[in-house]
Length: 422
Image 1 (cartoon, rainbow, N blue to C red):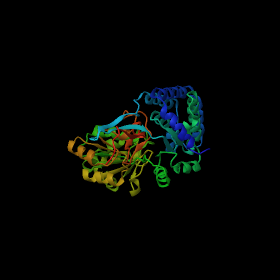
Image 2 (image 1 turned 60 degrees about the horizontal axis):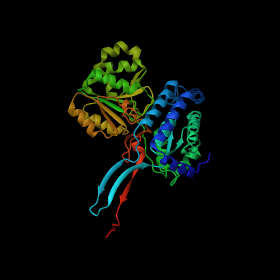
Image 3 (image 1 turned 90 degrees about the horizontal axis):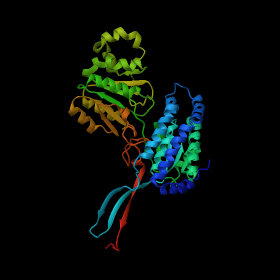
Image 4 (image 1 turned 90 degrees about the vertical axis):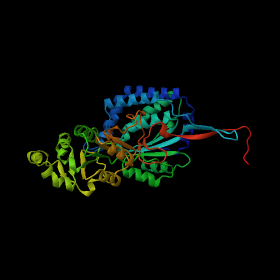
C-alpha cells in the first residue's frame, strides 16, 4: 500500500471544488450501488464474521445485514439532502478603519479516521467527509478487512463515474500504515480515532497530526428518589439492552437508597433479556431486607444473574449484557460517582424533581446529559444531524456527535481598500 498521502492532498482539492449538488449526486449513486451490490457486500462481511467468535461483543458491530445496508443507503441519501456545511457566514463585522471581516466555514482538507470492527464506518465517514468537502483516509481494524475492502471498492467505482481520483477515499490495511498516518503532518489535517480506550490512547500518544478523541462511553443512569418507576424501567431497559455493543449503552445503574424496593421491578425485564447484574456491596447486603420476598421466591431463577460487584465493576464500558448497580444516599453522591467513573460521554437522570434534574443537567460534565430519557439517543442521526463520525468526549473544537458542522473548520476573509496599520 502506498502511504504517500500527497495524492490524497491533491484529491482533497478536487473534492473542495465540487458543488453541493455534485457531492449529493455521488452519495445518492453510492446509496443505489450499495443496495444493488448487497449480495457482494454481505459475502465479504460473512468472511469477516467467520473469523470472529459470535460471543465477542464486537460481533454485532461487525455484522452487516440486508436491513442494515438498506439503513446505510438511507443514511447516505439523508446526508446528501442535508444543507451544505461549507461557505456559511459565521461572523461578520466592519472595523472602525473600514476593514470588513467575515468568518466562513471551510473544509479541513484531509481527515484520517482509525476505527475497529465496524465496517459501516467506511460509509459514514466517506459520506460526511465528502459532504464537508474533505478527502478521507480510512484505517479499519483487521476484523473488518474484507468488508472494508468491498465497501471501498464500491466507493472507488462511484468516484470513477464522476471522474474523481480513488485517493479521495484511501483505505489503509496494515499497522505500519497506521503509524505513517499518525506521522503525516502537513499531509493529513486531522485524525479521529473510533473504538476502545486502548486504540484512542495509542492514537493520542503517537500522533503528530491533530486528534479529536471519540472516547469510550462509560454510561450511567441515576434513578432519583423522586423518579417515576415506569419511566425508570423503560429508560433503563432501553439504554442497556437496545444494542449492548454501542458506546451509548448503559453500564451502571445508580439508584437512591429510598428506591431499593423498586429493584425487582427494574431487574425483571433486564434479567429476561439475559443481563447479568453486578450489585455493589450495599445493594447485595440489602437484598434480603429491601426485596427479600422477591429474592427468596426467585433465587433459583435469577441467582446466577445477580452477583456481587467488585471495584473493577465500576468505570467499565461493558459492551455486553452486564451492568453494575451502585446505591447512593443523595444526588450529591450520584454526581460524585459519575465524576469519578464517568468518561464524559452520556449520562442520565430519572426524576420528577425539577430542581434535582436541573442540578444534574448543570453539574454533570459530559458531552450529552439527559433528563427522563435514555442515553441510547446519543447519535448524530437521532439528533437530526445525519450520520456521524463519532461522539467526541473532549472539549476542544467539537463535543458530542461529530457530524457535518463539526468536521469543518473556518477562515477569516478580510476586505480592505488600501488601509495600513500604524
